[in-house]
View 1 (tube, rainbow, N blue to C red):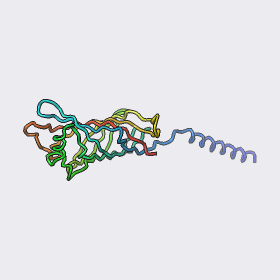
View 2: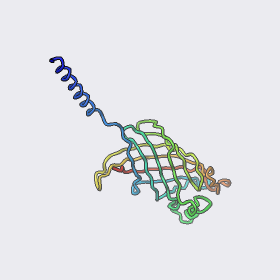
View 3: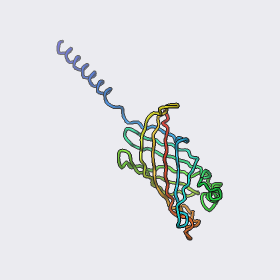
View 4: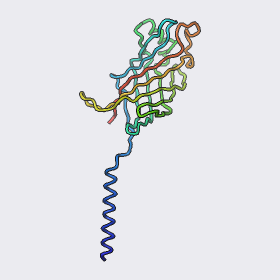
Length: 203
């Protein structure tokens, strides 16, 4: 009888110990959704003008979301849509030309879309994103080098949780069929892309 009680007592201790360990163990990594903060984003580009300088431009309107596991530093998805008509190089005539059929053809293709196909972590805060960029009706691969800057709760306002990212990449616009001005060196083929953005966690 004593032996039976002892076995039961030891079994209860084992259950309590296992339960305690489970409670002490860190929670499993959990991917979370984040959306692009329209008030804190910069989607910019650089392109060579003749042989003299490079033109700096922006896109002011975009929607985007990612799924990111902060603990594991793992990126699961990236979807970004940019309004092509929102292009701005601080020169009205040039911007109208960029919206025309020679370049972005904004009337027929109001959005350019980037969708991630894969991601590779290169360090604790850096990685490479591969994806497809759809522009003027053509879809081609594109690579972005990304840095995860920081994360935390805003100290004011609605005190939302946000992360900050920085990304760099480049494309040859001729691969998307935009060849205007390349042959005569009027406008460069390579477009450098620079993205600085905050994303708000969807709690």
